[in-house]
Length: 297
Image (tube, rainbow, N blue to C red; front, side, top):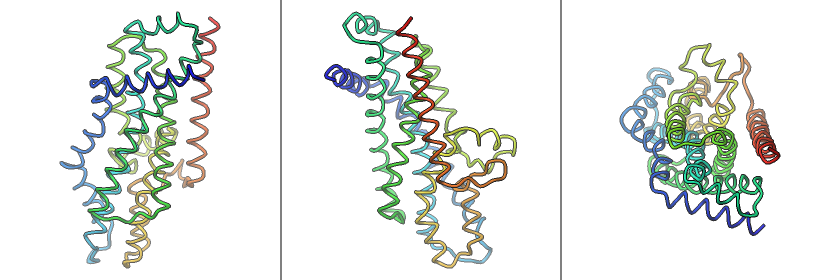
């Protein structure tokens, strides 16, 4: 147990000590903030206005609160996964520097090393993502706060689930990496591409039907929808209370992926949770199998 704790502390400290890796982990949130400030905020706002019946007034605080909720959900949906990949690069960095060979010489099992990388990745990612969550909620407080205490708890739960998913996925992919070039390539691909395929940068409803069908098979899609439902639930309820027709509010849910359809069938939130937990269990199982097989070899 002491060995596990020391390895977890070591890996976590190295992640925050390495300024290059830490800054890289923040690139995706920063890119999304720039996109939001220069482009996405106006697109989201125009989309909300277009979904309203003509001539029906809507309070600016509702619009700002809804746009802010969209921004927060997109930021967290992407960051929880991309930061996991950056946090988990320590296992690759140890291979590059030769530290992995030094650790293997010590009387430490390979599975113990793998568990140390895994848990430290979860801790490092949660620290970054909870900080981003707090910052996003402070922003919502000033532009339009419609979250209940339950919503906040569910958002925290969603962040934890997405971090577990991102850590399990990154553990499998990073397992095969062994050079600095591979680290940079994977980090760039994940940081730039994941936001599109999970529906964070552009709503899935705006894509073609074929692409929507493909994305419906990706677990990250349902993680994004979960966190989007919980950040937007309060503001959408506020819209209904202000007299906006339910049909218009349902249109917003469809437009911004609060409602996800799998070949025409609406996926309920319990099913979304089931998909995420099943995916995490499957990925963790694969990671365990890979490490056991490597140790036997």
